[in-house]
Amino acid sequence: MVRVYPSGRAFENYGEDPYLAGANIVGIQSQGVLAEVKHYTANDQERDRKTIREVIDDRTLHELHLPAFEDSVKQGHVGAVMCAYPAVNDAFMCENRHLLTDVLRNQWGFTGFVQSDASATRTAVGSVGAGQDLELRDNGPYDEELRQAVLDGRVSMAALDAMIVRRLAVEIRAGLFDHPRTVTPIDAAAGGAVARRVAEQSAVLLKNAAHLLPLDAAALRSVAVIGPYSAVVHPGGGGSSHVNPLYTVSPVEALRQRLGPAVTVGTLDGSDPAAAAQLAGSADVAVVIVGDQQREGADRPNLSLPGNQDELVRAVVAANPRTVVVLNAGAPVLLPWADQVPALLSAWYPGEEDGTALAAILLGDVNPSGKLPVTFPRAEGQTPVSTPERYPGVNGTVTYSERLELGYRWYDAQGEEPLFPFGFGLSYTDFRLSHLRATPVLGRRGQVHVEVDVTNTGSRSGAEVVQLHLTFPAAAGEPPHQLTRFDKIDLRPGERRRVHFTLDQRASSVWDTGAQRWTTVPGRYQLDAGSSSRDLPLSAPVTALFSER
Image: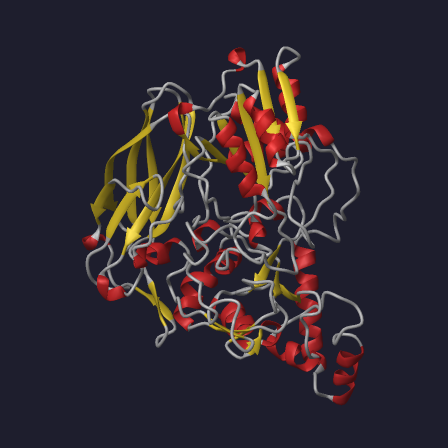
C-alpha cells in the first residue's frame, strides 16, 4: 500500500486501496513467466527498511496490508512470494512463521515458493523454520550457514527437501523445463505501441478551467514547452525496477512532429524562471512539465517538488494565463500553485512514449480517462502518517496507529479536505450516473448484484470509471466508506450503458481477530456509486442483502 507518500518506492505500488492491487498476476503467468508478488508484507518505507520494526494490529493487517497478497494467491495462483525486509510484530518477515506459514500457506493455501528480498535472510535456521525456500543472493546464510545447519542437524533433510520440492514443483507446473524460454528479437514498434497506450490511459486530468484543453492545433502559431522534462524523458523510477528504454520521445520532439513546421515550438529547461517567463509570454500557450525522480533506497525528504520548480510554475503562469502544467511524479506531491493554473495533468512516470502520449492528450487525439489511485494532500502534514511514531518511526519502531484509516479512509474519517481525492479524474466530456440498483443473487447467500446506468452527456467520446463504495454499520468500526468495485466504460456522445457488478460475502466482511476469520456485522449497509471517493451521488441500501455466515 502507498501508506507513506514520500516513500522512495511509492511509484512501484498500485495505490492506497487493497482492491486496486493484485490484478496483473494472471497476465504475467499466461506468458510462461513466473510472477513473484512482493514485498510481503508492509514494505512501506525505504528509510531504515532493513531494520525497521513495525507494530500492526491483526485486523489492520488482514483488511488492508494482506488482501493484495491473498488475492494474488487465491485468484492469481501466483508462483512465488518475496518476503520483505521489515519486522512485523517482532519477527522480521523472512523469519515470520506466522505470516509465511500460518497465514500464507495454511490460511490461503499457497503452494508456491517463498524467496527473500536481497540480503533479507538474517539467519538460515530462522528463515527455514519460518518457511522461506530460496535466498535471493549468493554467499548469504543459505550458503555455508545452511550447509552447516543441515550437517549439525539444526535443519532436517526433510525440511531441505521440502524447500527444493516446492520450487521445482512450481517450475514444472509452469512448463519451464518442458518449454524453456528462448531469447527473441525485440519488436520495438509493438512495445512502443503498448507503452504509448498505457501512458495515454494512465494520465489523469486534474484541472481544466474554461476548457483550455484540448488545444486547437489549427489556432496555434507558437507553443512554449518549459521545464526539466520538456526535452529530456524520465520514463520511470530508479532502483531495481529501473529499465533502460529502447528509445524515448520527448514532449518537445512529439509536439513539433504533431504540429508541423507552421507552429513554432520553443523550449527551455526552466533553470532560469525569468527566461522561462519571457518565452512563455511570447507564446500562444505554455506547457510546463515538472516532476521528481523517486528511487529505491531513499525516501523523499518531503512532498515538495525539488529545486525551483514551484517558482518556475508561478513565473510561467504569471506571464501566460494559458498555461498547462504537466506533472511527472510517481506519487503525491504538493502543488501550492494549483489554484493559479488553468489546466493540470498528471502523467506519472510516462515511459518511453512520453511525448507522443502527451501530445495526443493535449491536442485532443486522446481523451484522458485516468483516475487517481492515491490522494493528493494540500499540505505536508495533511497525511495519515504525519506523526513521527507513524513515520519514520521512533527508536527504530513504526506504529501503524492509524489502523484502518489508510489513504482516503483517513481523509474521510477525519473530515479533511484533500487537494485532489482518491479516484478523481476529469475528462474532455461529461458523464451522468443514474438508476443504482442492488438485488440479491438467488441461490447465492450473501451475494448482491449491482447495476448502474452511465450516460455520456458531452460532445466527445470518452471513458468513465464507475466506482462503487460500501458503507458498513457503525458497529463494524470501519472508516466511512471504502472502494469495493470499479469498471471502466467507453461511451460515444449521447450513449448510455448499464454497468454490472457482483458483490460477494467477503465485500461486506470484517476481520474477527479473536475467531481468526471473516465475519459480517449485522446492521445497515449502503452502496454509493460515483466518479471519485468524494463524488458519490447515488446511494442504495443493502441492509437486508448481507447476512451472517
